[in-house]
Image (cartoon, rainbow, N blue to C red):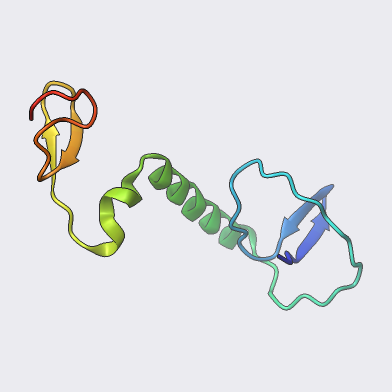
Length: 100
């Protein structure tokens, strides 16, 4: 993977969104004067991308993507006693194992 960046104020700032888990360790090989195929993001554009990344991380951590089923509609049943969401055809709770 090649990531183009600008070095400013002691920090390498990517010129386009980077899809990596937070706190991923990377190695940077510097090629000074390399052409920049993508425009440098403005602070406003960078902020908008950051909001998108934070939202995507929150959705992923909450497990919502798996509930969405890749774009198809999924019906879930919540067991009141433990508040666990279960598949609509489940007879027993996936969290506590008790009947729904």
